[in-house]
Length: 214
Ligand code: NAD
Image (cartoon, rainbow, N blue to C red; front, side, top):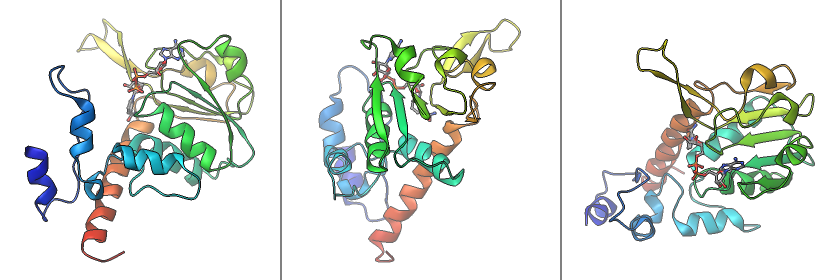
């Protein structure tokens, strides 16, 4: 009901459903209810479907995957013809980022929790994007010398020295991987702020489209 109110309110240009939802709510039904024109998170099945199809463009690209691609573009990292490995296959990060890399003409492999020899597969990559949610999963020896590493993971680990009792780390062992990679994103301060920037960018293009400024 709230979503249909937001859908019909012309002063609202973007609707974001904060996931995960409480158990009693259907994620599928709620995401489907968001007007595709206001789906600034890009999670509506129509947007994801368009992302997956050749020659179609979604109205909105999901924010975290879009932020990863923006980082690659801004740092002028060549994607075309490169081998990319995406670790994790969630609807939010792994799957859409793999589709985007493929659209950008990379050869993409996906590593997930059932993959055998993840180290061997990851070691072949020119570009590694990790979104598994497992602290220090990707070690320095997993990385091909000179590869580019984007660490999406945000994982709390115990840290008695921190006031909160924990600190946040990525999926990649930064200390080891930064010695091997040609470029690597830190956690925190890497992909996280890009996600927020891309959400603002999607919301701005939504407002422009609604006001006929596109
Ligand atoms: P998820 O739990 O939905 O998906 C995790 C994926 O990783 C699954 O596909 C699973 O198969 C795979 N996986 C789990 N353990 C693995 C292992 N040992 N080896 C290989 N693959 C494994 O998580 P998600 O929502 O995609 O988030 C992943 C991580 O990214 C989390 O740490 C999350 O906090 C972080 N995240 C960060 C941002 C950001 O803005 N930086 C945004 C979204 C998520």
